[in-house]
Length: 305
Image (cartoon, rainbow, N blue to C red; front, side, top):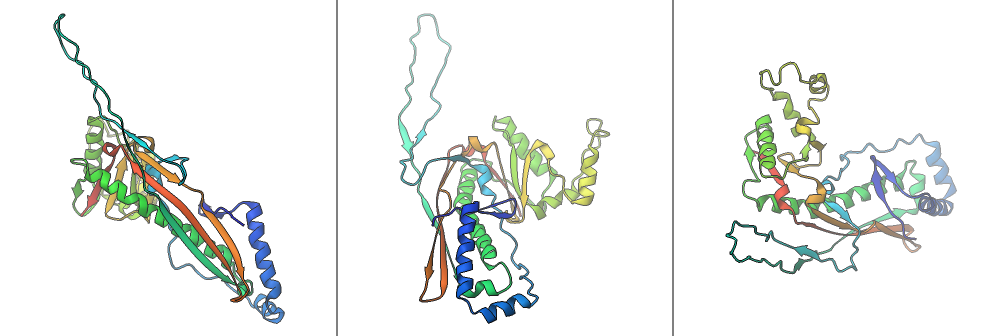
């Protein structure tokens, strides 16, 4: 049976009919398992394992617009340059014509796979083995998707003069202000920024200018957030994407995703089978992904060194 798998709001999400399929498989395995061992496991007061690896949170997807293309589709992305020219002329002057050219680029698809074997006696272990491992599989698929998209963001910023500034030691208000101002000056304003949550807490050292334009109008929530969370989420009118999986020494800033590029994603597909020779149920997940950035002028990367 094919099924879809994703994480939503920190919880594993699986359609009802597909979850029933998993449950039926586990019940079948339970029937095969030795009754005495199963009852002993249930009778024991089993506590589930404490997770020792932080949950992986996907973040690069916020910089790409979704497109419904699939691996069998021929994806062609039109290339264009600004060619229209208007000029001052005498009444008898000739008109200068410009002509657009026809050019396309395409994308390269990447294939992500993940496999899992669940022993038949896992139902005797006293904790949700299947659910836990499915969550891990979903996180690893997300990690690999980020690994496809992050190099594109790096290349886009590096390819634009002045788009990879650095700041020493800590994230400063001036470093953020400079990028916001520089982007607005050339007509490609910043609307979002991705930052490690620990790095965002550098805001505790920020000081607002003491002048009549600011004094007395700073929202009360600013001080409250700095005291309780050690950061103020919303500075500059930007959407701040903050979590622990974003690189600590880099901030990625950009305009809206629809102006930057596209990501092409299959649904996460899965299949299962029972191996009666090894007493395990085998599950695998796979997904095709491709991404492309066309509007690199919208992308900035700030490095804290």
